[in-house]
Length: 153
Image (cartoon, rainbow, N blue to C red):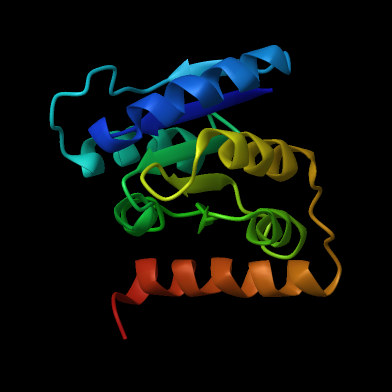
């Protein structure tokens, strides 16, 4: 498996810790930046990861910005992306079990390293339950398709 990871300047330190963790799990990391503490615009890096997941080139992604809110907003604009902002273990688990989230978003100024590591481990190891939840995922896909055909409501 490959995972695309991206962050802005506020998420750089946490991204480096998560990259180390993911590599230790024998998962290939596609690092989409940033690699500097110089101020950057989070949409640029959210777009890189989200395009890879949306296109199907990469199965999953992880995004980190100060709060995680901005990256979530950017990422969920992409068809087929189900980005979940998870700053605790329960939401990380449920985002996979019930929502089949394919991008994990973490707030780099909200979550410390130890908790972030556990969130990532939980998110990566939790399977999608399917069944009634698949029906709901298919409804999300239908909404995306309808909006693409007819525009906004």
